[in-house]
Image (cartoon, rainbow, N blue to C red):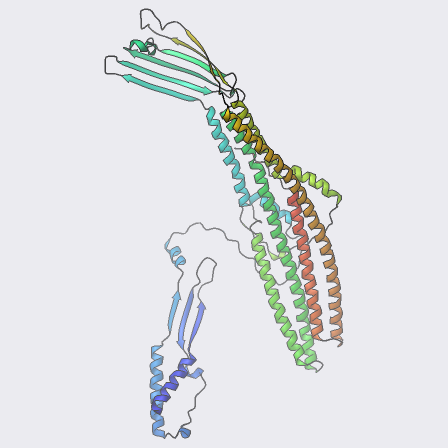
Length: 573
C-alpha cells in the first residue's frame, strides 16, 4: 500500500508545481498586425522546489524498503520529465506572411505619437486655435468632399441645358420593289430657342415613281431646302418646362453654398472642441505633475526624520503610497493627453493634408477669459440672421417655388403657336408643269385651349400651400437663430462667472495646502492633513480647468451661432 501511495504523492506534488511558461514578444506589436508570440513550455526543475524530507522512521520503514521507494520515485519522475519536454510555439501573423509574398506597395502614412517628455510646462507660443481652424479650411477631407457637391450641382444644371441642344435629324426611306419605286433621303437641324419655340432647317430629295396621292414627296433633281420657326404667342412664351427646369437647377446649384457653409461651421466647431479638450488635458497633466513633485520632495525629508526618530516609520510608508498613487494618476493624465492629441490630429494637418499629432512641447496655456458685452447680443443676433445658412437655403427654396408658381400660371393659358416655314426646290424639274419650282411660304396658327384647367388649378393650390408653409418655417427659423445666439450668450456668460469663482476657490485651496505643509515641516501637523489639503487643492484646480474648458467650448458655440465661418470662394471649372 505504501509503495503505491509514495509515487502518487510525488506525482501530485510535481503536477501542482506546474510547468513554467515563458512568454516572449519576438517582434514589436503594431496596431494593424498580430503580435509575434513565442511560448516555451518547460517543466519545473527539482532544484527549484524545496527539498521534501520523508520521515521514514516515523512510518516504520526499513532502509531496504526506503531505497526501493526512492528508485520508484525517480523512475516515475523521470517518466513525467521525458513526457513534458520543452517545445517552442510561434504564432505568425497571416498579414505579415502575405506582405512578404507580395511586391511592396505604397502605404498610408500613419502619424506617430510624439515621445513623452519629462516636464509638460506650458509655453506662450504654443499651438494656436487659429492654426487648427486654418488647417480645417485648407485640408480637412470632409470639407473637400463638401466642395465636390458644387460639381454635382453644376452637372445637374448642365444636364438641364441639354434641352436646348441643337438636334440633327436624318432619314432614308426607300421602296426599291413594287409598282411604285421611291427613294427619299432627308437631313435637318432643329434649334430650340431660349425664348420659347424652335427654329429648323433641312434638305430632302425624293426620286422615283410616286403614288399620285404622294406627289408632294417628290422633289426636283437638286432636292428641296426648307427653313422655318415656331413661336408661342400665349402659353410657354415667358416660361416653359425647359426654362423652368434650368432655373430650378440654377437655384439648386446656389443652394449648395449654404449647405457647404453649414458643414464648415460644424467642422470648425468640432475642431475647436478637440483643441480645447487637448489644452485642458495638458493643464490637468501639469496639475498631476505638480502634486506628484510635492510628494516626491517630501520623501527624503520624511525618511531622514524617521531615521532620526522624529517620525514613525508608517509616515514614510504612507508618503511612499501617496507617491505611487500620484504616479498612477500622472500616467492616466498623460494617457488622456495623448488620446486628445490623436483626436486633434484629425483636424490639424500639414500642407499635404496628412494628420499631425501635436507635440506636448506645443501645449499652450488657457488664454485670459473675456466677458462678452450684453449690448452686443442684439446686434449679433441680427448679424446671425443675415449670415446663417438656414435663411439663405429658405430663400433659394422660395425662388424655386416661385418658378413652380409661374409654370403653374403658364398652364392656365391657351396654346397659341405661330409656325412659319419656307421651301425651295432646286435642279431640273421633275414634272412638265414645274409645280415644284416656285418658292413656297407657309404660315400656320395653331390654337389649343384647356377647358377645365384642373391641372393648372391643382398645381397652383399645392404651390400656394407650400409657400405658406415656407413663410411659417422662415419665421420659426429666424426665432431659433435668435434663440441660439441668446442661449450661447447665456452659456458663455455663465461659464465666465463659473470659471472666475473656480479660480478663486483654487487660490483658497492652494493657500490652505501651503499652510498645512508648513505646519507639517514644523511638526504641528501630520501627513494625513497635508494629503487631504493637497487633494482639495487638486480637485479645485481640476474644477477650474473644467470651468475654463466649458467657457471656451461655449465660445465655440457662440461662434457657430453667429456663422462667422464663411465658405471660401472657388472658381468654377
